[in-house]
Length: 177
Image (cartoon, rainbow, N blue to C red; front, side, top):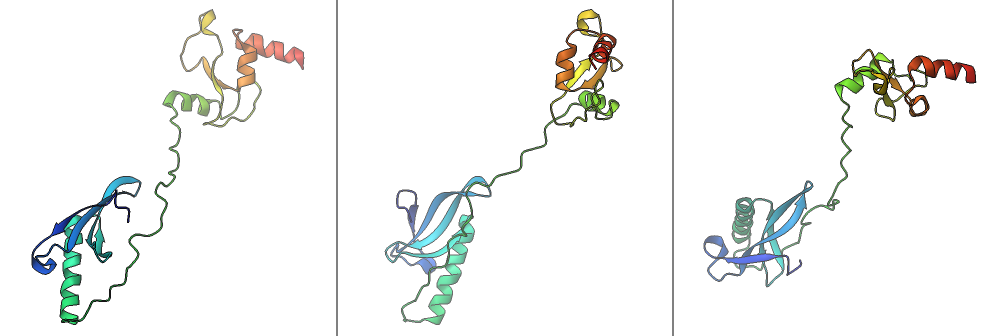
């Protein structure tokens, strides 16, 4: 146990006795990905841990039970204590899956209206991938943002189309083939 991280204070009374040989210790830890405190009832001089819990009351109750049981069994005999595993070996920080990217209703509707393909060349598009919401009649030429003017387009088609109309782009692309 690391002495600089382990804070403890003596416990007096009841099964713990009046000599302060048992202590309630606390140590910061990470539990289920969150910062937490682990409580232990220890006998510092002997290096024995009687109980461990993330709840102080539960750690004290478990230590009382063990001391009662040890006193009942071993009236006057020395107690042979075996140190159990304090906590299982688990990674402190676990990777959580990344949340699904947010896709606006408008973008999803345009993708579905285009049946998941580029409006101009027919290339299949991925809803969460890279593609543009394209204005068939560019805004620079008076086109609006209404759904009849918007289509899904792959990046190369949209960048090549630039500020030409959809008809101009298709006829230019038709001559190039």
